[in-house]
Length: 347
Image 1: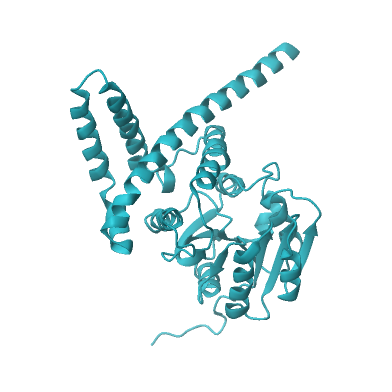
Image 2: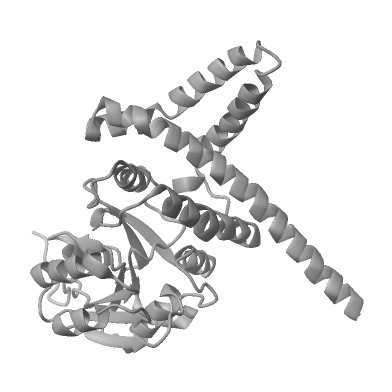
């Protein structure tokens, strides 16, 4: 017969503060607040940080019963999230964006993760497989994000501000988000790298999911992906040397990038060398086979025609990612050269 000590206590469920930065949130923010009212207990602290803007987001937040912090001018989501964290009263900070909605069990899954993994410092979740905006590009982009996280390594290498939770004490100790990022950018990734360097554990909890409501259009997508994500991320990769085989940095993605540029070169060469079309065909087939699991996922979720339409956008993704990496690499090393030259001249 095994005796259980009366001193053994089940882990205490952590308290959670939800922190939401918002800038001209519009209808998506209204839906976000309505969703929180539906699924979040009244005892849970909700902090909305209004980062400037010209709409009535602050009024909607106050009417919802949230604790509201207002900045007169925009300073970026990094500053806004840091301000929310400073006034939060709970053990865990759960950051979400103003254009997402949580699921009925999202908060519960966050609490369970920290209860069952005592050494866990932070976790990130995933977009769900039912994006809010109905247009093709929004469905493609958000489903691709869902696929990337659902097939990623659970031992995460970074953080994610759209659906990420972290122990408040550690967040404050490490200095929060880097407020040098004045626009929605890679402030969450940079925080994750600092956490990992300090020996903290970040977990990808695939069951923690939120729905993304953002409507992507070609110009807004390419601008955000290239200038606000890929370029600064490349410079951060070189700074921290975090070339890990996970999420958007998987080996298959790197090989696909090389194949895509090879395909582009073959197509250009075909204008004066017909045989190049043969190489283009081989490279195209290689790309299709290498990324077949992605296209199979799209086919299961939205049908064959949808999956076919994603292929050119997916290959375009490799093209602009490669261009951003090359540009960011040059910018980083030129900057390092100038810094080194300045230091040398001062000696």
